Length: 286
Length: 284
Image 1 (cartoon, rainbow over the protein chains, first blue to last red):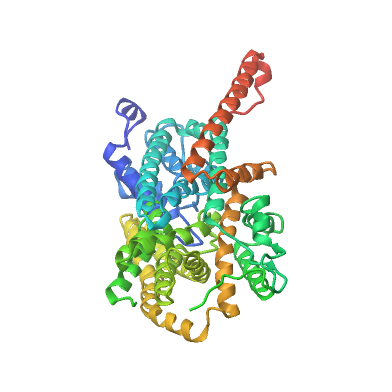
Image 2: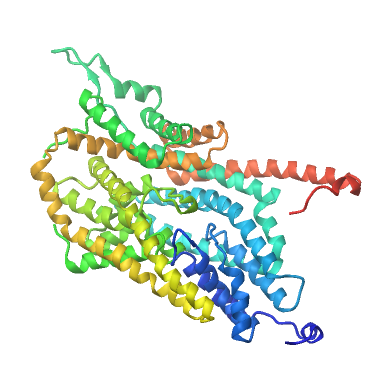
């Protein structure tokens, strides 16, 4: 073991190469060996391994340092990159005899993974991806491949650069990096982005869902029907049935606590009854 | 129209990469290759009909526009939706002689995609369960200090789980799929109640996908109005989605600026306070 003075004179620093390897191990491997028991634990260990191998010389020290990362880990993998960066910074401080130990690292990991999973699920999966997909769907009308290519390129570009930024910020700033994600300014940005997402989703619903009734009441022999329900509804508000169905499904899920699969079955039931009574008719023949 | 051995094998391989938890990684595998819109393009290329692939992929994408999987509970499996649902839908549309651009073709694809996606969750739980074996090997390795073995455990051995739970099911089902269309044709007439229900449900299922997302973003009842606003932009005012995104971006910039002003005001007020009153506020 080196003495404290020796370390202070020549502090250990994780090389750029090891940081890169650590980042890409996380980027690729965060969920590859997923199980319900240890979700991202192995991805996390693979992300820490290049760093630990560089900071500690003997096999015993490396194995001992790795023990910190054997605890359960699961978060939203993209936003969660900031946690990996932070723990790399803390591990470096620990190897330099700083005021950090394995328990502290473990506490940071365990304390942040839940809140960041919530932020990531609503911001990335619930907002950013739907906005990108919504715009891409707009480019795909008529079978154009443009939308799919746009989504694949823009999403991967944003994700890779965003994750690299989070990793580096976490490594440099440590605990302070969390402020970027949970501070008041961050909340304001999140609310603004969420609003764009909600509007675009409204647009997606209006342009891609088309629920129509075929109910027509007509006297025999008469030329114009007494009631063409779809026409009447269109005059009130175009897409009224679509809107009603979306809000109905939302109500079932959020107020009645039904799972998406149950709601889908309810929808199939409504479709069946609607077809029986003639409210719906897709009008198909061979 | 039938699917060749090579095409089925390619679908199987893509399923290994695109699953959650897939071997293409989360960002490029699950969130790129696994999205039905992207899969529509790839499957379309493999089957030699890009525009039908995109139309089918886009229709199914609306249902799964926000597939949030909190804590690893999934309600639908992306590999099944994208690499079983889309090839089968393309075959069914061609086999039944539907016009790919018609709303009926999209309804057919949506119903089929949702059914396959729901049944496919068994593949997700299968993969995760087999991975337990590799993790067990991993713990032994950590105990013995063979740390390099972790790479094999995390990125190598899960291929075996995927050969069993992704490659084989996708390969077999897409290969047998061409028979399915013939069976549908002979047993289920288009004007019968089963097919009517199937197509009608297909037109409604995207509402479930949008509702999943709404549940995620609506925190207070007034947020519903934001959704209705977006709907109105497109349904009544005829904007396309890019136009709607621009309008929303502009409005959200205003909202952000208003919020910044109130945050700054609060900061100024706190700065004016004596230090003693700030002490019990905890820093994050």
